[in-house]
Length: 219
Image 1 (cartoon, rainbow, N blue to C red):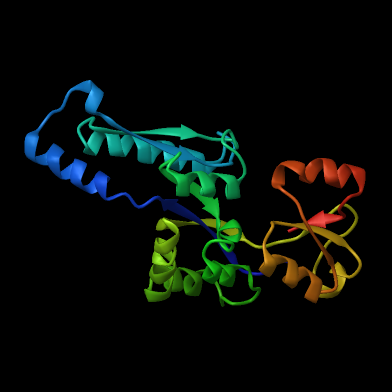
Image 2: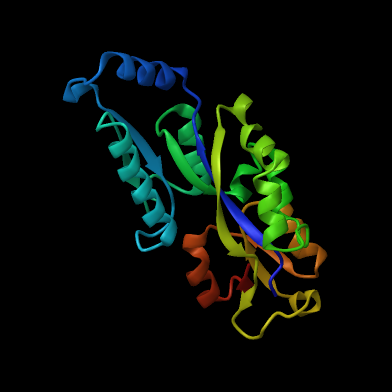
């Protein structure tokens, strides 16, 4: 049962020094190797994931467009922790960029919870019109007081459900099933309202949880 397009978000930590540093590079020209700015980027996806490939492309583009003055070092596959943990590292300045789902951002930017509400968008065109419009851009800036600033959205596809035993074609099919969700209040309330039992788990625990009967399915 597909519910709606589901975005992920790319955020970075606000740091005025980056802007000043870039201006000085433009004014002074080439700098020694020791002055190359390396930005640390963390995400939880496998290196075979298309989004990882996009981040690698971005890193190459940044190095090219900055004439080698700026680089991105990518830490994929949850090397630096879960999505929430990488967001917290971002706030502390331990990393500079994070690719994350919108659900973990709810704990920092409550407005991001709107993306967990089913049937909000009429379709993909409506979805992107909102993200690229005033509302979407306001949400990217809504975490400034939390030392977070959104850069862009990635399309993570439509929301859907899968279970071990049966197809889910309507909310009634979820009744009595334990469904894995991200640790998001909106996601948990959505499943509970449809008659399922929301069970928050990290994605890394999902397959063992399915095998051991801890959950019956996931969204």
